[in-house]
Image (cartoon, rainbow, N blue to C red):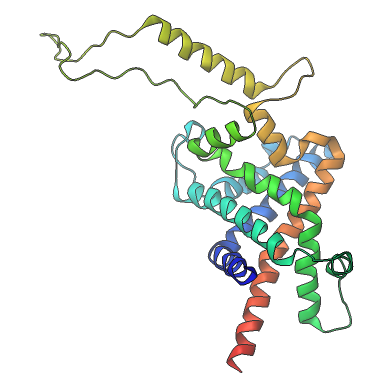
Length: 268
């Protein structure tokens, strides 16, 4: 069983590990700029470096058309797929390195500094990953929410946060509908109750995205954004997310190093 999950861990991380590292480091940069800019009386969103890093984090500089209406691009797909793969990598890592005893757990949480550089990197990869796995899972699970509508709907149901799809789709004309002799366009009579339901759903979504103004638990997009960016716990959670994002960027790099060293040793 461990060998099976080790293969999953490796083959999901190797192709997209670079993107995972970019997402973590760029997310860290966004968090730091947003928190530090006000200290210098600056608006982070007006800084060119901030907008550049946001474009990297969200779309890998490949911004789609209609980006805020669900438009897709290769960059947006890669970032979302990498987030999903990162979730799988993290979960498989938990299975692989889950200790069998308290003594083993104690050893897992230690980093050896006197047994060579490879052992130092290995211990850092395992122990640091254990320390921040919860925060990285929150980031990776909520990341695709902002890219894929189907994922947003699925995770909304999973979290018990109903979130209707963006936009309202009107009923399409059925086959055999009567056509006008003047403009040759099809018309269909739409149930007024359905229109009201769709309109109300759109209003609920807009309210959901803005959050509750009376101190109630945030829903839908607001909740996912807080879980993704670490704003749910004030400055304390943001500090934890900053540390986790830095370690999250380190994990793929250390993983590549360990994989390369193992291949070199097998060849020799």
